[in-house]
Length: 298
Image 1 (tube, helix red, strand yellow):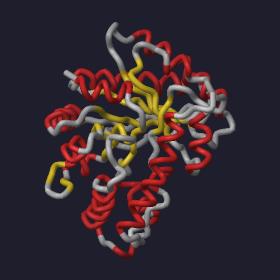
Image 2: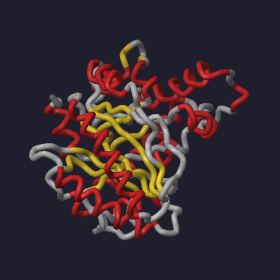
Image 3: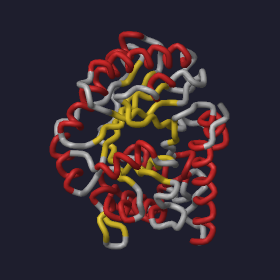
């Protein structure tokens, strides 16, 4: 059973969802962007401890609250950790921020122009643990590189199959079939993906809802039918490699879609900043992303 207050906040709240879910492969890059070079730590434990310190600093910053940040997507180890002695999901809830968790285990090699998710044999156990910690929902990512109808159909089928497993565990799935914004076939891929998602949504049982996390479409407004679909709780957008100013401009062109940015949110933060500098930089990013999520140019 989903928490009704969290559902209401995610469905109707003014704001965006922060993506704090960089995992093993992307953690060194995230730390380097934060100003910590690879020679500053040795081994996974030290690496993950440093990224957890960064996330704790974000979560406890004055500007990171439910006023503008509706939710936050966590990496599994972050979910299992603590912030100032409090379990991370609880720390978020106390700040008015709805906790989600990234559940995918990375991507398969490209086939038919797409990268499916790797198998998740321990997913049921992870979902049960997340539910017990007060997590509201999940997020799972796969990637579309080409406008290949067979590949995109396979991606959507896999996303919805995992989504149904998440729903059965009493959690809200964010399905993330990301279209590579650098693809030369981006516009066509957007169109095929939208149509396949609409078919999959129509096949869901009545009363069932999922969330969608999508790349900002090459054609603004293309995803309006998804935003308006009764089986979609909310559509959120990833920055996909756009710098924050460009991502916010593109986001503001799409009504009903809010941000779920990672790099575009965290890009200006540095380990070496004083707390005042860190909080000011994060607050500026939050304000800009909030503005594009709430104030549309269409």
